[in-house]
Length: 148
Image (cartoon, rainbow, N blue to C red; front, side):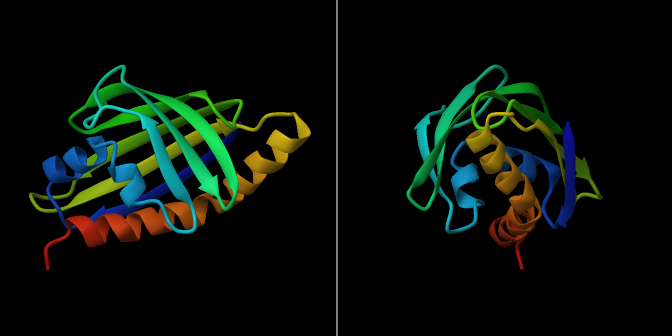
C-alpha cells in the first residue's frame, strides 16, 4: 500500500471550502491541464453514498473511474474507487478550520497498484504525478475561493 498526503491553507471559511468540494464539477475545475476530466454520471452536489463515473484523459488515453462518496461530514468526506486504474484507492478530504476565514485542506490517499503490467505502469505513473496534481489543485482552489 502506498500513502500520499498533501495539505494547504486557503483563505476561505470552512463552509465555503466544504461546499466547493461537494460539487461534482469542482473536480474538473481543479484538475491540471493537460488532463481532461469527462464526467459520465454524478449528481451536481455529492452526498453520502453517491457515485461518480468519469474518465481522466491523458492525451488520447482515457482512464475510466467509478468512485463512491462515503463518511460525509461538515469537515470532509472520503472517495473510494469502486472501479478504476488501481487495485484500491481511498482519498480522504479533510477541511480543518483555522479561524473564521481560513481552512486547511488535507488530502490523504492510500492506494494499491495493480499487478498486471499495463495497469502497474499506469498506476506508477499516476502515483508519481500526485505531488504535481495536488500542488496544482491547491493553487487552483485558492484562486477560485480566496477573495482578494
